[in-house]
Length: 398
Image (cartoon, rainbow, N blue to C red; front, side, top):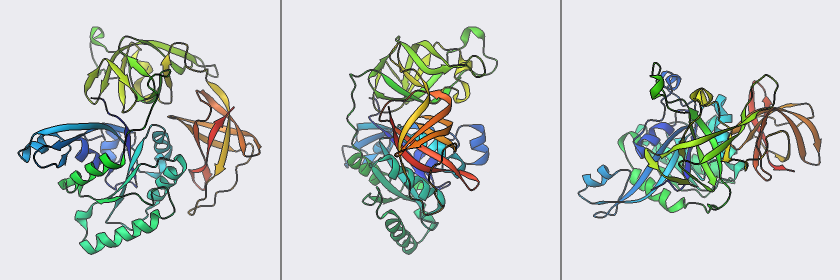
């Protein structure tokens, strides 16, 4: 069974996103050496969550073993892919990129801190802008506070969510380290987050959100494996053995145009399961015939994958019909011509310069070409104080 949707974990740093991901999936998603050392998520982490129903008790469980502990027979209802996004303020562009492949969000708010914390507010601003409306709020770390403190914190959360896209979202108190209320959370996810309708017969389009070299140092040449792409198919399907094209591709010399990369699909994986065919919903890993040096260290993140000849030519100038965001924490001044800007479009993050502003449309010259589609959501961040902050949101126009 392939996962039917992507669910993001959003919230302030150290509010328990990675711990809750482990409670739902059994996987610890902070695997990068720097993440382990610093104790925070830096890159997007991925894991699949399975939702089982115990046929004896009717209780929902995250694993077969959990159901068997109650003496019942587990029945697999569905699988969802969990995307664990970083909460640190310096990694907001990673969070914004993640929303391009999300169908729903688990929004974490810790009970042992006043609400909202800075990145709690920033992540909610992103949700309001993207329109991702399948949201479950999880009040984490309830084991660290009294009942009275938890209830007071819930009042703060409700007040904070008023007038936003998450105003009517359910709030589930959870102690992830002890598995408390995980069954209630699974039931809420199953009810609130129905998989979206997608066109599986359309041209293949996959957004690359991770890329890897899975070979260990010192591996024998004969045993080397090709580069691996990770991402989400937003329309169409992909089969093992097919030839694919990756754009923008690679740039062979400084200042030159990128060339598309073509390769063969050697294998498809999803949550540890091999697939003959991958389709929309969930996150997939594509084993390819690419030289692994091309995919190491997320080198191809922001690329678009399709069948040969079907991926649009990358562009270095885009037009965005935009709307300024209302920010309460900092002054968000109007965009200006010749102002540097960070542009998020699908999983691509790039730097650009505003060449022209006219009637709510910004013409932006990108430093590096990227693949875009008309109508695609785009986030614009600009320098506010000492940091890049989300400033405007819009859509690509022709």
